[in-house]
Image 1 (cartoon, rainbow, N blue to C red):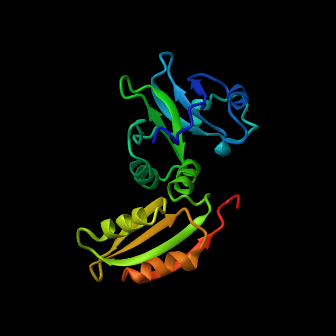
Image 2 (spheres, rainbow, N blue to C red):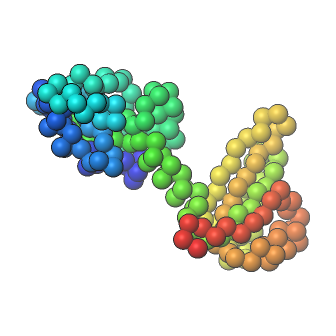
Amino acid sequence: MKNWMKRDVPLIKVGTEVKKAFEMVDPLFPVGILVDDKNNFLGIIDFNKIPRRFTKEEVSKYAVCTDYHIYPEDHIEYAAILLAESGESFLPVLDERDNKPIGTISVFDMLDALVHLTAFEEKGVEITFLLKDIPGQLKKIVDLMYEYNINILSVLTYRKAENDQRKLFIKVNAIDVKKIKKILDENNLTIENISFEEGLWG
């Protein structure tokens, strides 16, 4: 999770006026973390929800005192669950040693992580398999890719509970869809879909 968090989020002291707080935040990501004089976490502040006309009010009035937080070593999937449960667009990331805030993780950070974890930005062939939900099914495919010197860029899977099957998505570093399909057919691997993905930058 530490690979996706933002670390340059301003820590805003209790008592800071709204006008001053607005000067501290990034206009492209207008959020802050409310802290006391010892930098202990008190809440999160979404400046998109603060009317700019209330310049002399204390920014702490608009802080959300959430019980949800993340640690840098937590898995990205856990961060996604907490974001969904909290209903917030971002959550604080706290240091595991002293629980002091060191950054945030947002919905947009999660989308950025998804793009990288699925290799969506990379050119390659994406293959969808529908497999029996039993041990050893993925190994057959991975071993085959190794045999043909095909580099795997990403692997995603989920269980289809209604028929005890597992849907598997694999993206490989290749451009020849026909060649990949021929290899899979010759090895009796049934595919649900195969397509070339240009990637974000082609």
